[in-house]
Image (cartoon, rainbow, N blue to C red; front, top):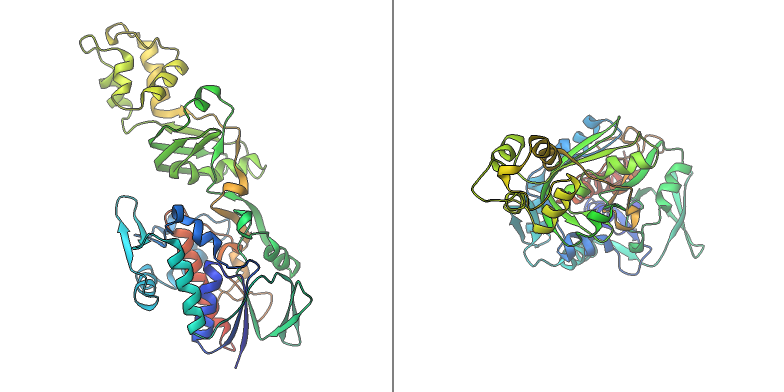
Length: 407
């Protein structure tokens, strides 16, 4: 019987352990925290967005080959993943059609985490909690895994599912990345992804708590990302799906991986022509009245101030240059930003081990036989909405199944 050690009891690791054991391997799951799966517990506001309702592969971000990424994702189609949770784990999923997300019907993330680990145990997986792996090394055709108490464990195959650097208080310390780098794997630069942006702009800082739907475009000389969705003014800057899903462009520019990035915002669903119509003279209506019809009052006041337009100005007296300046801000305004919340608030880590370093069918390292990689250590992430769990489930399953077989 093949001995498989899985390092990390998060989304990818728990799935890898399940499928390694299901394929007949003697499987040990090692986890540094007391309970494991802590990112699952905090995901989706404690509800756990298990999967997206639909998958758009072009939404994934990678510095590796997009074709390799597609092969990996397609290895376990969305419909089959959903069936696994609902029929194998017995966790009914509920569609949130407006946001295109799938949640457990209980809306409890703990049901997902516990369901995975409980099922792993039924398949024969042994769990070793509160044990940090400090080294992995190939020895005599197999592997030795050293944990922090000095114990050296032997295995025929090792699956690294240690996660990245995001949300470090859940146990993500980058140790797995360091071990993989030491083993000679090519690493794309890592960075915080899906993280809020910050600003020192006083006018926008005063808008904390306001939320609305906007279209954002972040653009540098090397990258561009556009997203329409929720936007939230925070005490320090901006958050919400639209911000998180374009933040990687700004983060990478700030880190020096790309030239500086600009973020532009379309504050409402109205485009240039629609605003031209909305700002035409209409009785005694003021310019403030026109903006308030489409957005929160405080935001309207802030944008008028940026456009240097008197808020009480009747539309009948609005000059052409004022109208054009205001429309420009409303449709493609500059969103001032100076920083980001980093890994502390990042949903995922970008970058990691190049996808060219693994076999996309098995997730086995091309550098070391018997070493398998899955989840966030790999150079790929998707938008919020279940994409990153889908990646974890798919890569974990492929790694687990392959590690259990002497290929």
